[in-house]
Image (cartoon, rainbow, N blue to C red; front, side):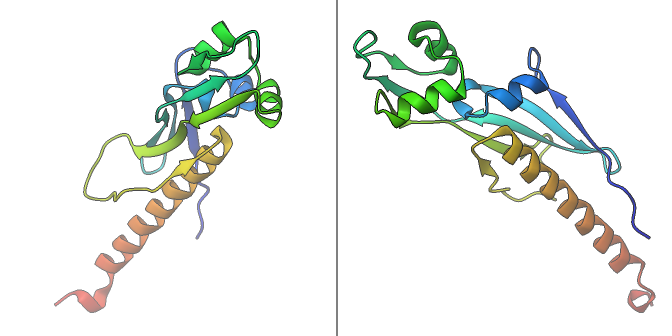
Length: 155
């Protein structure tokens, strides 16, 4: 009998769903972004923006500026949206030397988790990967229970 999986999402303080939909590049985020929990197994994965940002401004007005975060890009470079960022990148007016990424990891490390290899470039991709990992973990728990409950293994 299949059961519905119930997933909850807890956003980092000061973050809302609209922002996640509008600002999809990891440059805008720093540190913990959200936590995804399978409420049935009470297993949680944290999604964070990690890695060093180095973005050089080649526009005449801002030439030479180096931005190390989305906050600096907004404050000092007057860039506030993915659309504006992508336009400037496409015109070679901004140049990434390094960009951050989204990564999933267990909230509590235990013997059940190996390295998740969950590196993505948008919050939506990170949510998809985190959910897939939680579902796979639930299936692993179910299979382990069935294995242990199997009468053939009893003496």
